[in-house]
Image (cartoon, rainbow, N blue to C red):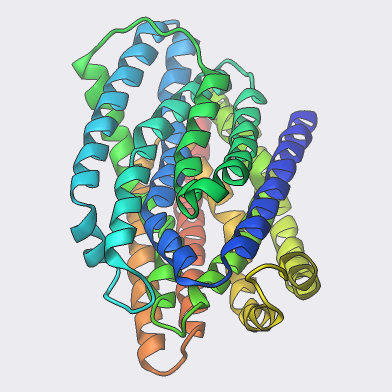
Length: 425
């Protein structure tokens, strides 16, 4: 497990490096102007959908499919029926969301002179078709995980990251900001090509309903927990012009940095916990969970503090050029303190939720996440109305992330006591 964790972590470090390079190129090309602000608003919902699908569909599907593999009970037909039914449902959902892109933008983002609703809606209506592509990629990736090929899907995601930056570079002079829009969608296709397997079509209402009943609470919970980007952009739009670009840059640096150093733990923890719980090896599961949490805490705190100390120099060295000026750097660096605590939370949240997911406690995860979002939004709104300005974003993010961490740990300790009590009977 240690070797695979290191390999997967290295893959994501390389991917994060390429994402940083992409961020540098995009920032230099567009600066803190309205074109990039439009894109950041438009890509908020598609990014959230992709993140939610990647974060939840594997968690919902893998325990069910893992049981089928262990019991050898029609696992191929199960995978096929789930794949085609969810792909069809997500495609219909994408079409509907695309048709209603204008009211969606008006609902989620209050009117502001910092962005253009018509252009944002056009970009959103195209990028929303990331939804069925993300569903296909995640299910195919889960198939490889279930068969203990842990490296394949991370490599596919790396390929998608590489294709994204290459498409931006190739298409920028022709399409301008739309190069980012098209690259966002097409990089998912490249991921699918790499993890693709032949799937004979089949359909089962019972399998479809069963996976949807498991996945739905996770979707609600993950939308709540992954609303960090929505919170940043909804509140950031009403600060001074350009603030959204600065906030986006720092949130990317922090979330990617802390997340990539714990991603190896996240990828390998769930499949192993599923096996342990299926075989009722509760002591082994408990030891693995404790070790994973302790390691992720040390790593996340260390990385978050390192990012805070190193970012001023790194941003000045890497990002100044083109349309991004030294003045933009000073404004960006001034916002660094609000992300230190959320940075730790980004590294921890997925690790702390996984014991509950492995036990198929999706409804409880959803309740914890939605409750955290409600308190986070209320906290940010209260802070903003009481003159805390940009600090309201940091407060909201901290409540969102640590509310989920504390809630999941509390519920896990409750179920842990029940598991060990039942094992003694």
